[in-house]
Length: 109
Image (cartoon, rainbow, N blue to C red; front, side, top):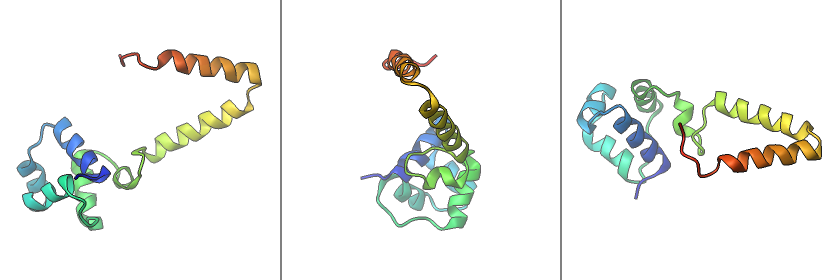
């Protein structure tokens, strides 16, 4: 039973085409501990271990701590969008909703 933290670490490791051994070695942790982080609900890693993983995987530490996985920059963009959205009149909000709905189910590209 993995955790969100484990899922994030595994996905980034695979995206970078790294083995457990390679990431563990570069992060200065054991392969078995990394496997535990990816696959079991383990205690939270120390700040040092998390910082090391974050640097190697190219994400800020906050990415691993946030439940929804957004970075602070992404969170700011979301908040700014919704502030602007709330200021629109009813007809414009309806148009925005229709546009968003038109993107659902379409492949990225």
